[in-house]
Length: 148
Image (cartoon, rainbow, N blue to C red; front, top):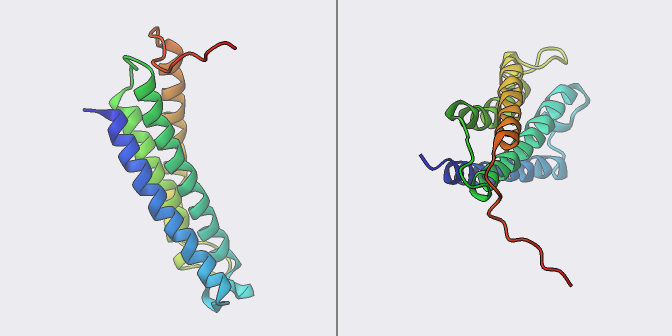
């Protein structure tokens, strides 16, 4: 499997989704939608903001992962590490977003339980990439900078 293309494709589509979500949040803010902005809905607003941020960040992490795999020849990526980064970008922000749809007296809904699972997947994926890069004996395929 071409993990580089997998992470690049997923990362760019995820970025499109999370940027679209951000536009939706800004629209609700701009039109002063009470379901999102009222004082009693602070938990919802926080959960949606956290979901948008973490989704955007993890989309960019997946793009960086794809570019890392592509730029280091013979990069020894494990399937489980690739799986973890992609699912982290779904579960971590998804937990925040689901937790914000239904709130209970200022507390997020039960969907927020997906957040720690996504966070652990993210940690596993990032450490897996760092270890693979540290153990890689192959030189980078990136061009060397020219001297002046």
